[in-house]
Image 1 (cartoon, rainbow, N blue to C red):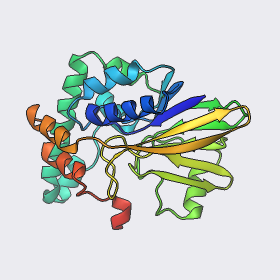
Image 2: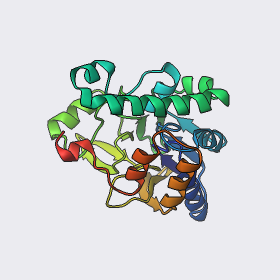
Image 3: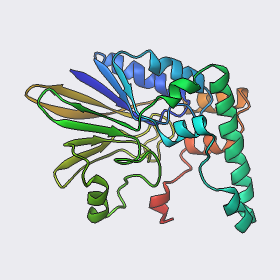
Image 4: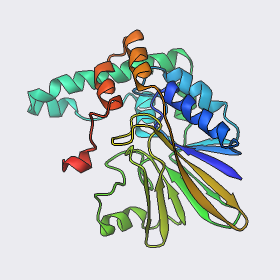
Length: 259
């Protein structure tokens, strides 16, 4: 069996279509596992939800951005942060406008109940008996700093303690990762939309599994970033300038900057 593992699509149907086309060129997939952050940030949240919900044998977990759309929670900075530091007022307003735009689009199209039903994680067993845990940020979490290369072995081990799995799949950081910690294989397929440089192509992973074992095949699919930026302008997305910086490779992960 061949399973396509995707994460962090973020409302970008142009990137998602490039990934789905690449999967078809590889012979297709028997199932799709999608690790959260489906709709928010990009120009076409409803288009993404329509596409992924129609995929064969699809399983999902919720990301923090999926939860924000349902609960009206928002990422940092908070109002209290801005009261302490007035420089944070503009980011606070920009984030609020961006999520309100997406929330309105998703709610109008009737997708909020579907998002609300997404689970925090799911577990399954591969044909050879390998136990799999799929989650967005870390075992038991859909938010926070997530699991990234700057963490120490002790910090990684703490995240995985008690996970009761042989293979943990996660997203959230937009950074492809494949490592083994205390016997647990830890894999992040990268981000379909908004990966960090140097490789700005859409990232995903194919999992090949049968009764004799399994292997992972990291994949990248090129797509037209400027077309996404043009679409952001066409729909007058409130965060279009910020998202354009990400699409053009001008952003760096917080952990890499030492923040």
